[in-house]
Length: 154
Image (cartoon, rainbow, N blue to C red; front, side, top):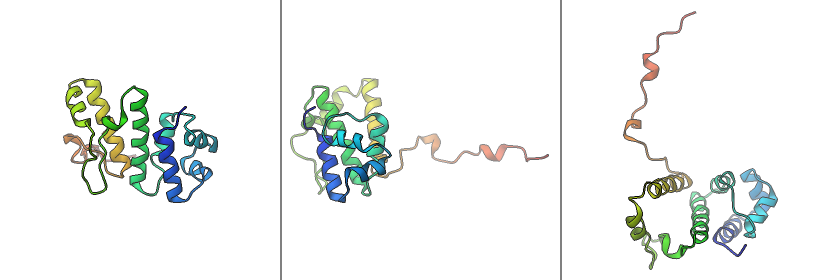
């Protein structure tokens, strides 16, 4: 497998936190061999492994960077240019130049599968950033179901 975004992101984050592959494996609850294969670009993460490596970093932004790197790899695997398919925000909050993700979303948002995928990715990014997932309107208030139960008797 060729050099990819995920392996570069893992290397950068491990260097930033000054941890070894073994320490990352311990944090994620996966084998050191799995981390080695991911960091060498020799494997694609399973959903369980992806969840583990996007929730183990001390900095919540690092969790998001790892997830975005994986998504860029998946976009490339699908045959698209990840540089123009994903909008990257610069540290000052401005959009990175040359990215056309919003146009792509506008073209395909009517497709229910695309809409569901975008929604699930947004939820993953929110979780990775340490934010509470969006609540549906009916979830805004706690349920009163417990109040309607009859009192406990023996």
